Length: 342
Image (cartoon, rainbow, N blue to C red; front, side, top):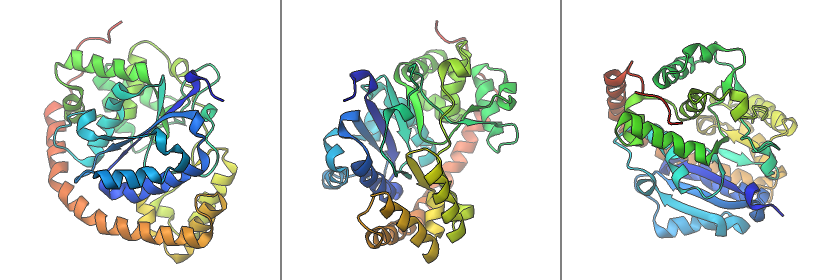
């Protein structure tokens, strides 16, 4: 039995194209999450069109014994996000949802995160209560410019981005302290003079960089705020979406000590029959599906649905990406005024 302080809140922000992935995640939580370990499983519906009542109930049913814990929220009930890409609006919602979280911490997931082992709250929270995080060194990382831009915006030395000590990862799962996240939202609104969502979209910062950078801007160190010993959760990336890559990712999952195994959406789109067989066999082995045949059928169905949804969504977002670039150019180089509230 878990105490109230140990209860989890899991949050997944999803758009219509990723619903097949969320359904996989729901099945995996039905198998691997103890309902007594979680207060809420929050699904933020960021799709267009939004989930109807029937679709939401069908989704909820996939969570099995966890279904009574599932809350489906509409994006507009979490935050009024300006017109922008789905990727950018998802980032806003991952932070803004803190105002509706009922536990001291919450775990942000992506729809593509599938659980392949029992979920222990201790994986997400250190014994002393600090959120656990994966650590990444950004000196040669492709996201280094984004991290440096975010740090400059917050008034934090951008050299922090190249520190050998590293920084929190941008990949999920990402654990946030709820009070810290809400303080960040309030502080950005106070200092910028506009709603958080508008400020975030205009500045073009990244959500998890912003969260950790803001913590550092208050005078706390990385190790004071986080336990950065969380092992890296294995991901099957698009560049390795063949049978050999799938076998290597599965083996890393077996030995990683993490409950999560992620197949990137781009990889799912590219998996050929031998690679699909490897992934399906692993899902069946870990109880996400009753057998490999059921897992293979589900994977074929997921691939088909993603293929139908991906191209229209990408085309629709072309003008929105241009709008996002224009906003970043307009606001580039202007740091957030003032200092964090004491």
